[in-house]
Length: 187
Image (cartoon, rainbow, N blue to C red):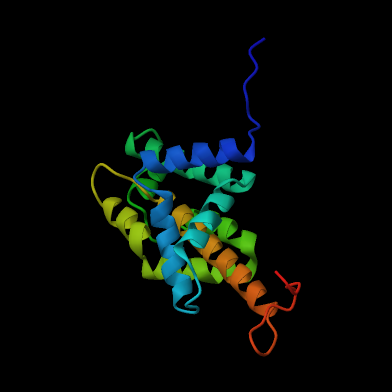
């Protein structure tokens, strides 16, 4: 009996997602850059490292693993003209009234609530960094990034929201004079 593996560890899902994204021209650093620039507008304490850590954390989630894998595969199949009927052109041309790709993005960003979805809306409308690149490359006759540009934007939005939550949690632990309320004296 041939047993197929369909359940993966977090580290395996992160690595599969990293490889899938790289095959499609997306580095984790390029996603983290969008999160960093979005959060830097609100706090000087944001670090690129925290944004990259957040991207990696999000890419290790099972739901996000499924979204990334499905989005990349749909785009690849559209590039290879594997769909039949009008859906082939609708996906390949990234038709503006086709919103299923954004729905998938909202689902990923929604892992971090309404703020995650609001951050996704900002990234989707303003098309920064790699999201802009994917969108423009998708206008090429050979490439399709209809789903992946939204998933990448959503991952950046979720990472940005996670960073905001961590930063604000750190601020909440300070007293009025900026001292850590939970630091034991002598540390």
